[in-house]
Image 1 (tube, helix red, strand yellow):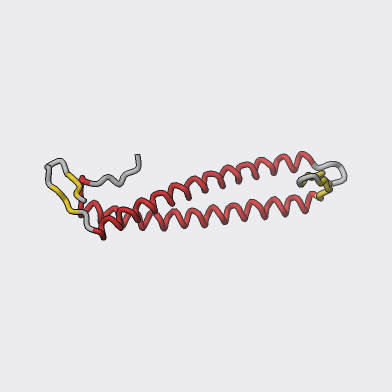
Image 2: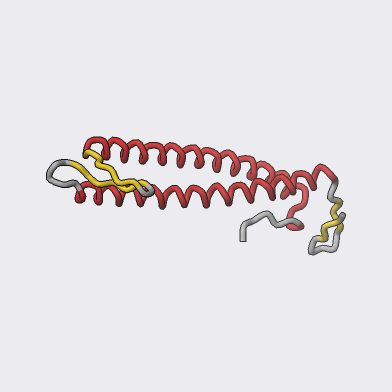
Length: 130
């Protein structure tokens, strides 16, 4: 397989190079998925923050809140609701941090591969996002 450059000089793509290109492509797809996951988590976290205000407003005089889970309605006390809410927010933030760490690792590996491939192929290869 040859890749043609503007100067009409052919560059041979060896098996090792093709494996690096394929790996870069897989990492790029994984990075895109992780970024989308993180965006969704941020939206979920924003919804949890909005729910905090709704929880505070919805408590009755007796300090309870009616909660629906599926087809069941039960009373939930303010302290329990706040503790559960805080736990959910902390878990979501921890998951977001984990995803960000994964994104950082993938981007670091992509940067290394990109440098190697551009060093060999120059302008004959395009690894930039569109």
